[in-house]
Image: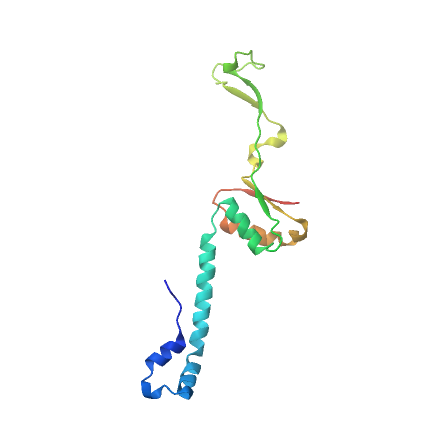
Length: 160
């Protein structure tokens, strides 16, 4: 929709031809000046709302949004996905003898060994890497990420 509204044209069209003198047009224009400010505020609100609606939970869009809001000159904020690696030990179809003895009730298609620090509860969905000189803005970054990330996704902020 077109929300633009030209008040000067509206005034000149609404006044009768006899009253369209420069002084009368200026006087009526002064009366409509507060409405011009309201129209400017409306257009500004529409523009920011449309920009905010373009932000989705996709990481590339979220990364560009964070760079627009926080580090708009150098654009050093990076969002990465952590690599989840599993230490592979043995698989049944490889026709090798297993190094472990499972119970009969345990299916053993594959067996993985995890270290204590590789607990799956500590794995995050994405990592936001920020430079050290903007580390004072971590609360603002957290608020922006919380507002636009997908529900249920976890993240971590690392300073590089």
